[in-house]
Length: 87
Image (cartoon, rainbow, N blue to C red):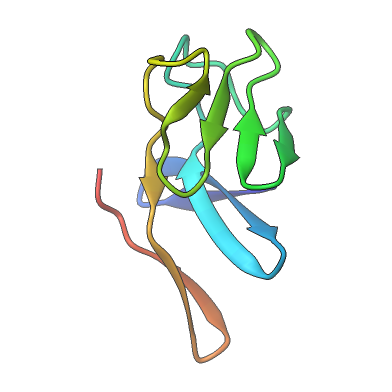
C-alpha cells in the first residue's frame, strides 16, 4: 500500500494481481489508519478491530453490515495511475 494525498484527501493505493485500487486511508469504523492493515486478495483488514473490506465495492465483509469503506475508481492512462475523487 502506498499513501497519496489527493487534494487534501489521504488515500491508499494498492495493486492486486495487476489491478489497482484506491481507498480511504481511514477505517470507517473508528478512523484508524489502514496503512498498517493487511491486504489479502481483494480485501483489506483493519489491524485495530479486525474489520475486513472489499476493495472493489468498499463493503464491510466482516463483520457483516459494518460501515462501508470509501473506494475510488482507478484507471491507467498513458502509464499514469488516475484516481477519480467521488466522495
